[in-house]
Length: 371
Ligand SMILES: Nc1nc2c(ncn2[C@@H]2O[C@H](COP(=O)(O)OP(=O)(O)OP(=O)(O)O)[C@@H](O)[C@H]2O)c(=O)[nH]1
Image 1: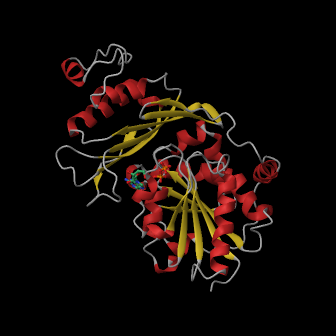
Image 2: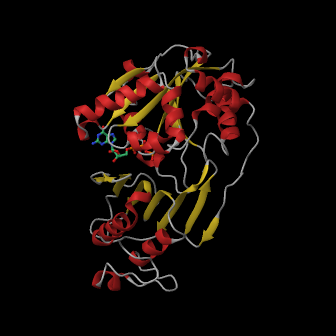
């Protein structure tokens, strides 16, 4: 039987900051035994739960949507159900919960639910908010996305990730900026472990800045906007939708049932980045490679950076094929789908096939021009 209240850590950080990477490291630590992980992902093709290296029964995947808006009720139901399962003996032990938010989440509504929802207040206590800021892309995220600022401002622990990719001076400037946003916070530069991040003590909004208290106050009056400004355009296998916070941000889900040659994926990514690299916030996906279909390729792009692709030893579940999620800012129309269709040989009207792109990759009729 577990002791109530159960500590809950909220893991946040802008798109691609390294949340899943950190989670994978933390879950190997004995301090996280009997931890349930709740993952929320934005984009209709869920990938993150496949990349968390833990027995799948400890991971709960919330449906598509963002924790701070459409799936907030689902989080409350999930947590209430965990309490019920513990009380009825269907789960033996639950020592801790980690909630990984989407990179675009405003953490305020999540915290508000945990701190104030009548069904949850006695069963759970918010242990702390851990926010990740990427040393390479963090400045740009803070400049351009209020969600990134909110995440940093509400944190009890800030972790600067990807310090191996940035200069010392850049990291120092970023630390100063973060201290200005969140004066009381402890900043961990580089690899953070369980002892740095857990047991922060009860979350205390009074210790946070005035902005955070205002955001939390606003979040408590902001229920029931399910589905607002959430478009779905069904285009066969591809879906787009606009994020409610900012209709300039869209997610594009690309699915191809079948293997794809590495050269096709490489060229698709190259063209996308050279034509619209400035509009790519996040890209991640799992690819069935024609050259070696048994070991999926995992690709990650974060703003301008394409991280070195990694190979999984095997497929995490029975599904094969290629699934990519792209989150973009101001991307024109259906450019992404058309380009992807061209490379996976599913020509859409007016879209050339892959051979044509190989012949002249800089001139793509119907897909827009490459700068
Ligand atoms: N070089 C380097 N790469 C890192 C580090 N942390 C994460 N990455 C890479 O950054 C990419 C994105 O990492 P994720 O852990 O998926 O980021 P995330 O925050 O979970 O991403 P979203 O859920 O899409 O917001 C991956 O390719 C990671 O391998 C780091 O400290 N150094």
